[in-house]
Image (cartoon, rainbow, N blue to C red; front, side, top):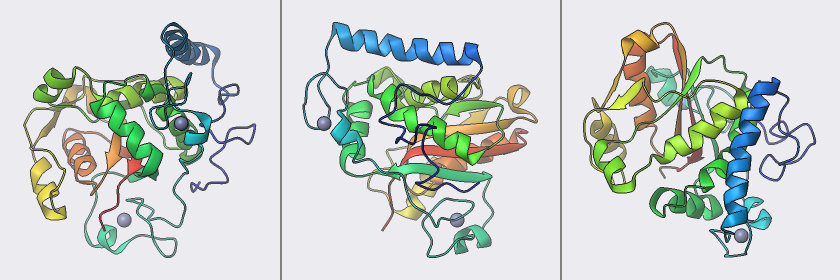
Length: 265
Ligand SMILES: [Zn+2]
Ligand SMILES: [Zn+2]
């Protein structure tokens, strides 16, 4: 099924960001785990009342009016890489060069509120934002109907983990895994090399920068269908590099999902 703004809603018809009371129907134990996870963050909000990371309004990590500004990407998009197209189909690049991933999708454009919120999550130690920002991704996966065995975050390097103490992709991937009832795994895909930041690099430089940076455990990935989750997709180079190493180590299929899509204009 194709992703459209119309079908990316909960059963109540609301935008997934604004609907907390009616999560998608799940097995009871899955639903309970997710509700417990949400309750943990709600308890922290009660103990330490937050302010909206975008407008400063009190008592919300991101207020309702700011969340309403984050709108899902619209079709038509490329069947494989998910980039905007004039008409439905496969883009020229995906037709001329094979992709290691089966499909790559993003939720919303990297701008405005989403850009600011992800900046807080990534650089501002505002880790509670992960749970709220990840909410629409579970609904999105239901709509996409991808068959997956587990979810892995794009791993962070050792230097990154030492400096920040957390991986922002993991803070998004864990609540998504709880939402859809799939295992969250950090013991499969690793960042073993070091690359410089992707910011400011050209399209070609991004591809070269992430080449051979990742590794995967063949014993755990063989014949499995993997969803790789990241915060932002720019050129798609990071997702391609992750998918390539997973496929080389025996994965049967790799899908990619990012919260935001930054366009290379
Ligand atoms: Zn706000
Ligand atoms: Zn494409």
